[in-house]
Length: 303
Image (cartoon, rainbow, N blue to C red; front, side, top):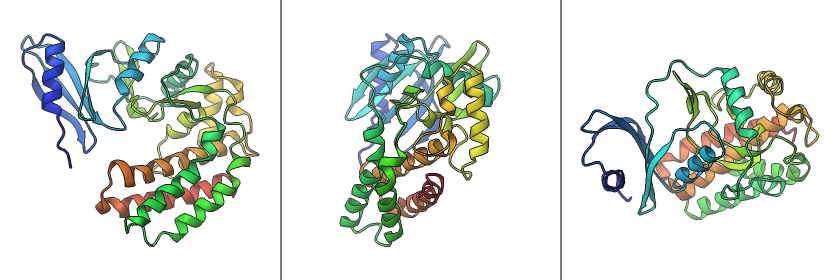
């Protein structure tokens, strides 16, 4: 496994910003990325974030969002080295409080009302309905590598979803269709003394905005359609498009959003398992999450 080149990345960024040295302090670090606070000799600070593929184009998404008027932290400098991205960003300081549902709604209305831009990947109906088939391809690769051998139930569920996907993906391009943050949780919204900033744009894309609203309450607890319905109604009241409440794919907006959000997560978990993490030691955790989500998908998409 390649060691992360964060020290060298930071050196490059310090050179780019005409700084000589900085004291590093870890904020949050995991195998594929890290966030640190760096303090310069004069006492000023910045956030140093580094991440490996496929999280290596967040600087572009943040700069784009900033240009289009979305409140995000400013990127002072960025550099890429051996498939790793490093960024020096504005330090927003401690948050004044945790983000609540109304904060989430307000941020989503702003983001989804922003004109979308070409560099972002697109998840339209064609792409959405291929998610179960893509997950089946990941499963095949995992099995060829002698992994996920007892996952016939996963294959069966994905087959059933793939057959229903054409009908159930209808309505994907109904409004709100545009910027999707995709890591849209209360922890991605910084509420400071000077207002709010949206963080963590590493996997932003163009697609159905309902996926953001479906992700807001997280995926640890069972999906809660009634709770999401309330959020969707708050979103419309807060200036979001009324089409957010429109049925799609023969389902209510909330069931459609929660079902497809979980399917999107399943495909991502499986791709991560074979491609980005690629560590058999993590298989039991991933298969457990995938099974749980697939059960939800079958239920929510009424398959």
